[in-house]
Length: 429
Picture: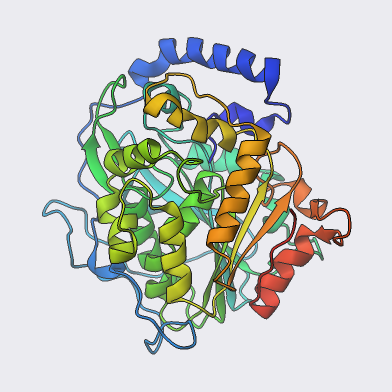
């Protein structure tokens, strides 16, 4: 999750550099926080619970339904919600990024949004990638979080060579998804793609916030599924906020695709239990973003504690799909996530986060691995460093993990094993 967008572009975010950056952003916050929200009151997006009610357990770990179908247009839609478009996206050029507005999907400020699509007509596989870009749950974080995504932002993100790096590269022979179809889901809702709460308020932030990332994905799927019929495999992935979002949206995505297997790959969105992800922080996310309608609703009785649920939600999903691989990519001292979880300091009362040390963050990763050890379909690629996110950039080809007696493993090989064989391993400390 990119709590501070500028941090994602830096490699040294600790010590003096870290505090200088925080100081700069505090100044920025004081200047722009009034514009972080919007007083607009747009039409309500989908609250479609019927389409995302959870997954039925199947022995094969794949859905029992005969095939994919568009999400149900019933359920908890608000009466004045925009209709859900369930038609295939027409006239998509081959191997070219195209921006597609999605009816009823909106950003945090209420502005309309869409998705990016890049098709390979010869492929029967699809990668759905959720963008990173921060979070909005207090004045500090909202000031650094994007609140809109339209054609201009699409061109900036995916124009030129930006849309042909990392897992999007069609020329990289090491990229297991090089010849796949691609869908890019932008992040402009401030809720790690996992919320469903309209007209929310955040202390210190002006205006109403539309935390509807999960509801947007429901609407996105309604267009994606008829656009790609007859698929063999789907990969749901994302980085930072998108990594958390890929995990949060897995149940509704798997259900929507029916019998088509949906694999999961989370980059830099590590689930952690309290005290590493403090319970006050988890409670704040759930309340601010409306997780009672999304993550906690999907998890049901497996998430007994609404203040300490991230690991339980991961375990719930993996148990529901025992033959599906769930991969997590992270490093031992992620300079952004250590700040993000640091907002839990002082029972979540501190304006400035207390950055987790490398030792504490690594302990959190290993604690998560221990908690998930009983699930052979969950594995992590943990490498040494302070960087944040890998899949979307050039370092995807060079990232390695393992040291000492353990053999060095390339991330591209680890991902290829997950994609091609449906198995996942633990690599790193």
